[in-house]
Image (cartoon, rainbow, N blue to C red; front, side, top):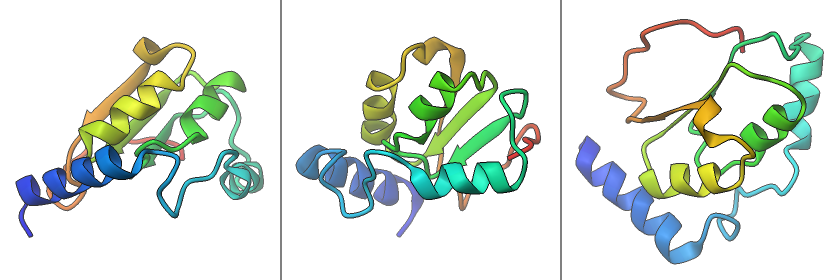
Amino acid sequence: MDQPERQSHWDDRYRTSGADSVSWFEAEPRLSLELFDLVGATPASSVIDIGGGASSLTATLQQRGFADLTVLDVSAEALDASRRNVDSPDEITWIRADLLDWSPARRWNV
């Protein structure tokens, strides 16, 4: 499957299922937050959520004071769902890209 096919596949999946109806959805990202604590991440840490989709992690981190947040996903539908769930979407960097073809322009702490 090439990049346009992957984008279309995941856009269709989120469009038909809904962001909170996919099997991997978590209302609260408990395990991710525990892992952030284990690695010593603080609101001063830069974070990228790769494959973040419509995850609630970004909204939760923003509410906890994290300011340097980036979300990468192949699905525009998933990113749009995530944007709707954060308090300040303009303060987050949103990247629609296929991880398999993507080259980061910077580094993040987490």
